[in-house]
Amino acid sequence: MRKIRAVALKEVRQILRDPLSLLLLIGLPAFMLVVYGYALNFDVRHVALAVQDRDQSAASRDLLASFVNSTYFDITATPSPGEDLARLTERRVAKAVLVIPEGFGTELAAGRAAAIQLLVDGTDSMTATTILGYVGALVAESNVRVLSRSLTAAGLRFQLGSEYAPRVWYNPELKSTRFLVPGLIGLLMMLVGVLSTSLSVVREKERGTMEQLRVAPIGNLEVILGKTLPYMVISFIATAVILIAARLLFGVEVRGPYLDLVVATLLYLTCALGLGLVISTIADTQALAFQMSLLTSLLPAMLLSGFVFEIRMMPGWLQVITHLVPARYFLVILRGIILKGAGLGPYLREIGWLVLFAAVMLTLAIVRLRREAGAQR
Image (cartoon, rainbow, N blue to C red; front, side):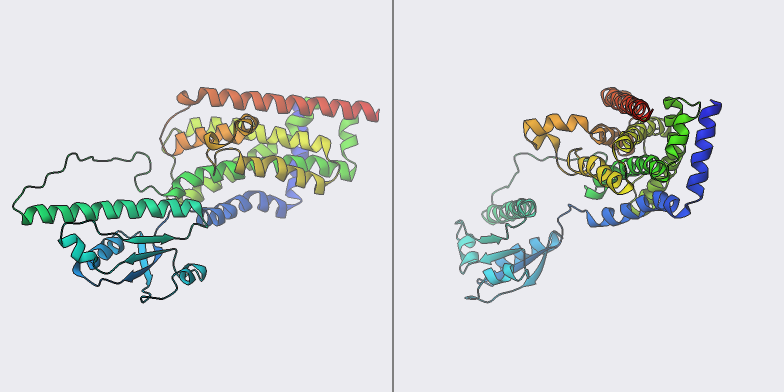
């Protein structure tokens, strides 16, 4: 224990000699959370809608009112008949164009189906699909109102077949930010953990002080623990800063037990720090270590963890690869604790995978350090 403390104190002194790096390790994650938290938003609201109303009837105005009152659409242009509608989407004046033909109100009054046309910019398929869903729901509601008025005017009673009362748990406002922010926390924690350890050990190599540690009467495990513990503390401080920023800026608060969150975070940071140690045994320069850290932490945590893309929608061979990404398991735990208020009980499988990954990374780091020491002797 005394040897581990000595190595840890040495590492703390080196960290304090470079306050800029310490500030970056703690402040950069919070800054990135703010940038990504506001930039990444999957909510489709206030869609720019161009309307060409050729009918100008009470029925067409009622239909347009349902679009505007839904808050999903904002009318940005009213092209006249004969105007090139494709130009509106090309110039990004509108994301969708609604065309109401002449005789729309007359057809409805006569009890016949009245056609309308919707032109959607399909460049962004996700947004276009959402727009089609919005329009389908609004048109269905409009049809129900028309049918109700027609039956009431005929002296008949209008009665719906069924009604449903939806209740959304954990995210009642259906804000994508509440789903994305926990993912960002896991992404940034992985980046900080891997970068901090990989760069610190490689810095020792570049300065020539790593050989002094190897000839000292200190075991490889003691070296690893001594160099890892200070960055574990820094990573926890960075995590606390991120959680506070998420609470103040995005209203994302921790609903589950804080002790369970600390345990899960400890395991996850151990995985990140272990991966950083493995990288440090491979890279000989800080530039190479930085590049390897980004490739092995940032990109997999963003693309293969379920942070943005649903894992079940990926090809089968790619789903197998995602099992090698610890962020995949931590994000499930993190969202459960933060959003659902759950503990670790439902996530024992994910905890097991994190323990296995951490053990493998630390074992690899020890083995490679021994090989390097043996090769130099």
